[in-house]
Length: 531
Image 1 (cartoon, rainbow, N blue to C red):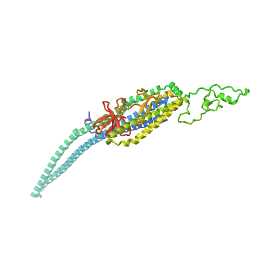
Image 2 (spheres, one colour):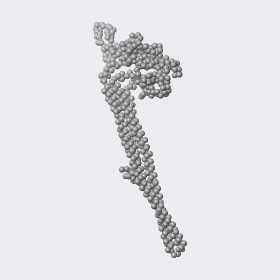
Image 3 (tube, helix red, strand yellow):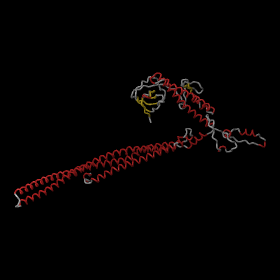
Image 4 (cartoon, rainbow, N blue to C red):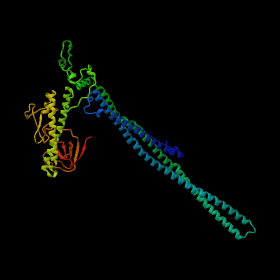
């Protein structure tokens, strides 16, 4: 069954129904848009909530950062941030796959419907025009036939009139004959117009309009199918991210199971243990025996308890619970208890070592750059690097001094045995470094703990260096000969893996698939780093 056969006389109903269908599509698009706005606002609020409670904004020395409950809370916030990202993805996919797609399809349907309605209107106008011609022909035929009857009656009356002349009779008969002929022509024209109208009317009701109605039916069915697909996408869009959302929720569950209250208690001990001994018994002062007050005071000082060591007023019996004044912070952390002082000094040494390693790497890079410039003057002026080399050398010297200073303090705090690893490097005049054994003698083959040793001999060919994970790719815009030591050649269009970014010296470290590594001019390539 189709509209052209069953609804041949329901043009207004079909027009209204198709318009209502298009309005439903528009209404659904608006509904999905509002849903995406809700998702986006929800995601934004979740991100703001995670950011608000993210404790990473605290200082690096925040003591709570080692508690499993603290770390798990950070994991919860991170998972919620990822969860917010999935809500944003839902909104984005709904907007792209439903709203934008349906809006575009809706415009196409509107144009197509408009075209079909225009065809129907033209067909109707054509039929109306033919009907007007038929009606005009019919009225003319009616008028001319009555006129012919009137002239025929007049001719007959004239012929019977005895007073009429033969000329009058002849004239009346000619007039009647002419009017009869005109009426006959009008009759024939009316018959032709009637035949034409009936033919067009048959074409209109049995061919033209059914065809247009069937096209509108097909349009409406396609509209319904597309809308149904939009309904399905509304669900599938969210189903698609459900596995990832599930992982986020699993991550939150895992964060809860990772909390270890016993370990947190141990961390509290480790972070706050002073290293002091408990105070000894207070000796009896027998004033009846004339004991010297001063000697009593001295006896109370042996052994010294936390009251003396921490400078507490001995008159306060419950010194442990009294409010402590904030100590003056010193560079050598002498204001801290022994155990905490050793830990802080060790942390400071590790920070200095990391900074020192960066400066050494920078010094080596600048040395290689200078060597390249000296061998290839067209690449740059070696003298332009003098200020950077000088500054780097000063930084190395300053950090080395700080390193020795903190090592001395750590040794004073009783951590000498733990700091030998920091005394395994000295620097020569060229900014290079030599390995020393713990006793101060040069050692050609030193095997320090990789996690502790902060310097390693730099191999110009990168053969003995552990391969690092590429951080991106680059494509050569120009060929580069790579004739200097430490550089690598490349051809225009060649794709290389980026191992180390440009540190501001104009060179980028890259690697080929065969493992060859070296430096290339940054301006010679286009770089795409991994996100």
